Image (cartoon, rainbow, N blue to C red; front, top):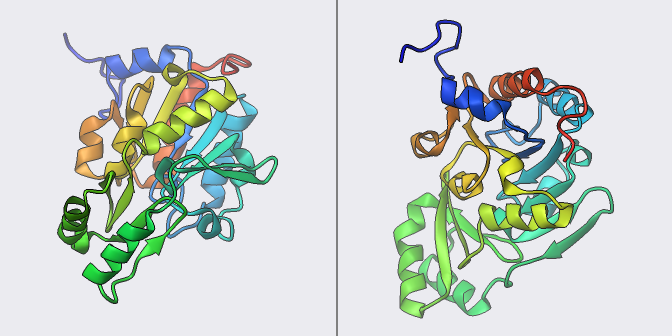
Length: 249
């Protein structure tokens, strides 16, 4: 079948059909997806607001810690739910309440890791521990040697260590349950390897233009440009396919 000439090269007829299906929920990563150098631009903020005004529900799913994102993100109020530490912590911007929904950091593992990586920067959350991706093999060795019920996932220049079963996918499931929404209603957008779990079961999976090759391979659509341009393109597609009021679930 010959592709329609009016479809941009980053789209397909299959993606067009998925866009036309009832959706209404946008789940996005933070760094490299809606934020550059830790900040959400005015253009991206306006794009998110346009989706919100069109009755889209917005969920943020990030590897950041709560104390790390609050001082730099001025648009958390746009989100119905914020999932942090790669799915281990939930935060409700409307009430300002947060909840640890995964096992806490194993202090024995942390002590073993500090002995294995003396002086190496460790980013310690309530459930997640992160370090440079250069330390991945040694972190894996500590997990295996201690028999810890933990797993490791790549996130750009870092690796994140989390309890088994905790991922961006599990965090999204928690948020959807809290909001009474379904996974097939979700358009998921990300840029790194740890967003592959976010994609699982979602109605449409989109990678921003600066995404890793592994994530682009797992996506239904690879958007053009950097994160600001990619989010704007996606919003234009979604708003074009959504009549007023249709996005409400």
